[in-house]
Image (cartoon, rainbow, N blue to C red):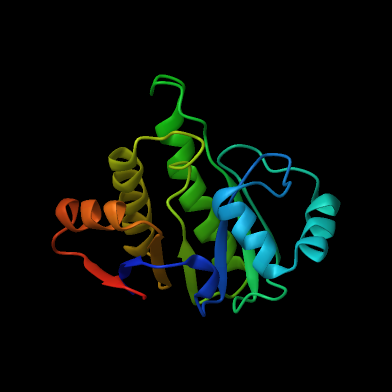
Amino acid sequence: MPLHIIHGDIITMPVDAVVNAANTALQRGGGVCGAIFAAAGADKLQAECDRIGRCGVGEAVVTGGYDLPARHIIHTAGPIWRGGNSDEARLLHNCYTNSLWLAMQNDCRSIAFPLISSGIYGYPIEQALQIAVAAISEFLLKYDIQVYLLLYDQQTFELSKKLFPAGEANSAD
């Protein structure tokens, strides 16, 4: 199944799993993480995250989707940008791959990702897009799952259309 790059809000996606750009402590944060917690039901989601405990950088864990249209939330802790010489690219690639594996293990046929680490973690947008598309595309060469990359702001969405003109870029609005 193909990768769809979409301009829209991840919390509205009717998919089997949405991916949360989490922190390693699995605590409610800002940005995408805060929006997912708020939409899912913050108290219920935080209680389950507290039972799990933590998620290492590049790793992924799964919880219920609660009040989201998704059955599951896959939490992955992306790397903080430190200039590019601290293994950030490999760790970011692992976020996508490990999330996809976890989705498959939970019988998900569709998954929606935000652009991991590109917000407060400071990963350069263009590099984050290239890593996301590469990791997802590599996975899709071997496995069948519907993947959406949700880009919240118009500027990032426009950049994705320039970087990947053959890709399927749509607005969910």
